Length: 130
Image 1: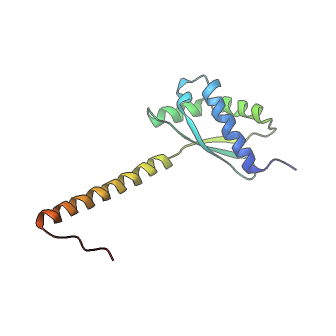
Image 2: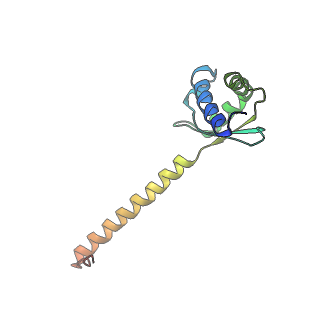
Image 3: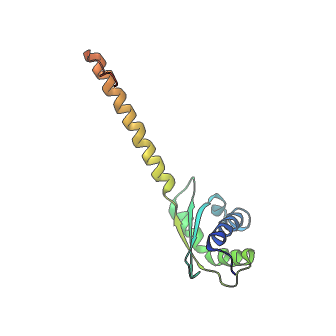
């Protein structure tokens, strides 16, 4: 029986992170963090979600695309895979989305505080909580 898809994804994530950090020749790639790996059931495609903390997205996407062949080959060796899926790189936007939601919550709290201060300046008391 073969290795489960979830375990293969987990191993690929770990090994790809190590390859990017230690072995990749492009220095941009040492700043890339692999956040998730998804592999199709037929093992044809491996989507690699990544994030970075400084610089332009285009630079990182280009660097990843330029060394896609090397990364695929190195990953196949590390995983002892006979068939290595084609790599597809996508930027993970969940961190940006989480920051956006946090900003919205902070804005709501600030707006609430302004309303309470304005009501206090007008002498309006808050309704008692039931």
